[in-house]
Image 1 (cartoon, rainbow, N blue to C red):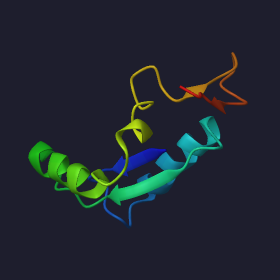
Image 2 (cartoon, rainbow, N blue to C red):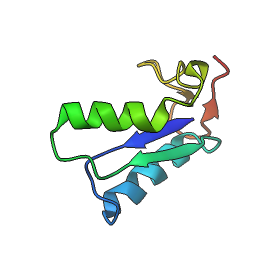
Image 3 (cartoon, helix red, strand yellow):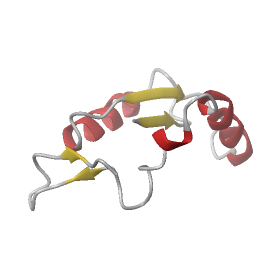
Image 4 (cartoon, rainbow, N blue to C red):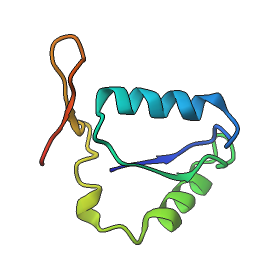
Length: 85
């Protein structure tokens, strides 16, 4: 599961581009839009929106979103697969 919280705005083509990049790298990913209306560069508002929008998910659903990533790639960045943990 990948939660998306940005300041792009719902009508921005960057939302679709970001989703396309994630799904290309990890076709089995489940994408959850928390919000794309966070005020630009407002870290406190972003933290609140992320907390409010994701607090009902189980923590173990977010554990794999660490810097090591949730996908494994071949040498060319193709045929990604979701890690099990």
